[in-house]
Image 1 (cartoon, rainbow, N blue to C red):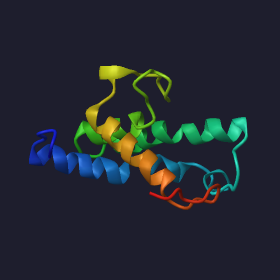
Image 2: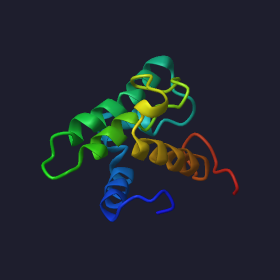
Image 3: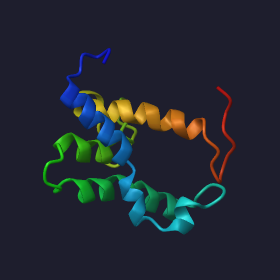
Image 4: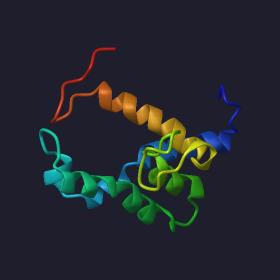
Length: 120
């Protein structure tokens, strides 16, 4: 709301945030739930969840394109060091930038099979 997003765009952002990791449904549970650091091949498989999510969401009737773009771009970084496309700056959709921040915060502040939550 502080960014001046319309009600419609806020609704799309909310849906994008809920669905951004949809592509993980196509990744083996052995990789998603693996305790400890993944090996290089497992990490490459895990990174594909962004593309899988985009593919799953892009053709659903009635869903704004920003939803699929958020799934695709939520691991892109301002400096171009993210994945899967190495996008940077203004090439990253605003919703993906917002969801990326929330995703990192959630990952850091939650217990995972591979690490304990960091205190606030």
